Length: 427
Image 1 (cartoon, rainbow, N blue to C red):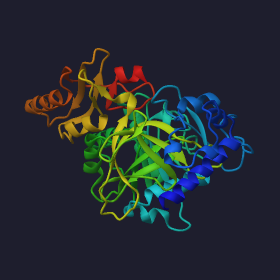
Image 2: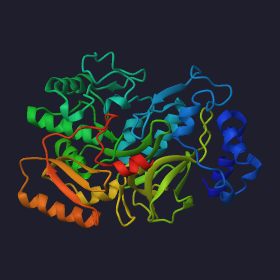
Image 3: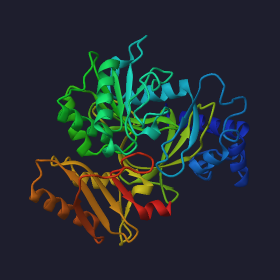
Image 4: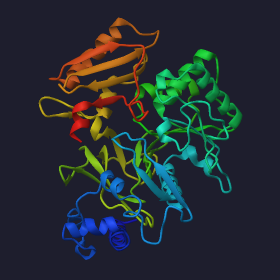
């Protein structure tokens, strides 16, 4: 799709949203705008960004297009995990979700066999309980209770990941064997935890079908990926998914390990201080849906930051490359005014074979504490070397390393590897 054709589609989406949704009409009129005013990209940027707050406040009547209700055919309802605050209720048409998924996953040739005509992959999900549409945190629900209408089995897991009892872990491992999935959809930190337990118990995670893995929900750290690949083997196709519960698949990792953004089903912008960033610079992802009949979103500020890259990818996909940086509320704020992203922190840490899991936390004074759970390969020199790298990366702010046996998850049930109380309170 050429740029001009894509922008024509954007203008149609603006007109549709203005005509069919109460919220967006009011949003435009409050800023003295009508669809005919938007003729080019410069005009488009006159539309103030929309956000989760708008959709939380106006859901459902104000954001559903006229003619639809939550009970209309093909409408799927979702609730976000609450990573950035209160949980967000949303809805999406099933065929839009499938189209976006197909576009994104299409960059990875190792997933091609999953989508044979007439096939329906069997999916197991192992992720924070707030990311599921069933009660799975207590561990007392049955397999049938946790099977979604599309056949996805949601595995049981404690809300506080590292406090998950052994019997609940055994139950999850047993259910994978019983269900025999084609695909595991997981939070990478959660699944790395499951592999550590499986190794300890002498268990394997296999299926008579060819397993594939989609990772999402939180940043895939190099530490988590190392553990997953070491346990599951190099033959397992792994794809890191860029996505949001309210939008579906925004991008995916190709078979060369690069992340591509879906600019076919979405019009994407990367913005900082209200201005588009250059390639190689970090900006917040703004998304405009294309041909979304249910909940059209115009210049939707996701709160997620990426660095768009100019290089072409050897995988052959024409979807543009990006580097994942992380959420705005997790950015480390330095005293000299600079910002260090969770992605940059993870690059400093690397795959760290001596660490099982970590969390860097910035308190309200600006000081940073790096807590980590070490494994039995750890040497004193490992922590010393990492402390030097983190001190250099986060200077002039203070950094303290602390070896621990337990790290709590967030209120949302997610395990975030990098958090900042300064950024969270300023959001």
